[in-house]
Amino acid sequence: MKIAVFPGSFDPFTSAHQDLVERALPLFDKIIIAVGYNANKKGMLDHEERVNCIQHLFKGAQAIEVVKYSGLTVDFCQKVGAKFILRGLRNTGDFEFENAIAQNNLLLNPTIESYFLMSRSGKAHISSTIVRDIWFNGGDVSAMVPTEVLSLLNEKRPANL
Image (cartoon, rainbow, N blue to C red; front, side, top):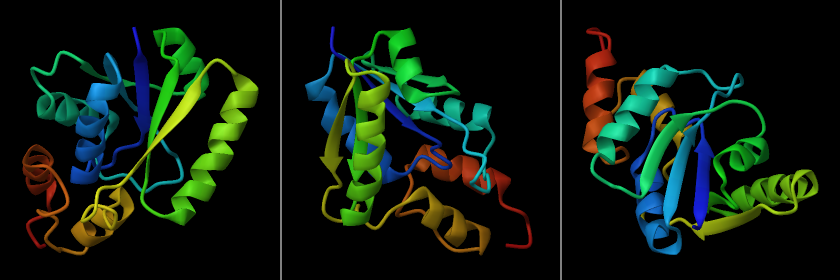
């Protein structure tokens, strides 16, 4: 069984993330969306909210599992029997960053390969960081996140924004 882990903080999960997962489904028997914690990022949603929201988004998709994780991604992959790490690339900056991570992951566990998918045209400008910045400043993020995520964000928006 070909299992891929799609790791990230997904704070929030964007339409670009959704597009990447949907495009990767034919490549793998199962995709585990692994929701991690990044102490360097100012959070919008807590771990449970992110997991629940993504689970709701992919409700009924048998080949997709959404779980929380911490620690090294290659260790998590080993634990769940995944031989692949799925990552999206928006630009050359992402390539440089992700390539370094992939090379180090191969040193840590040479049995786990990284697969990269380029962002689809019209999605490459979307990042969780940009969505958070727009949202925190009262802007409209409806074109950047799935409706399930937008509903959760709207519930959390302070009344003065």
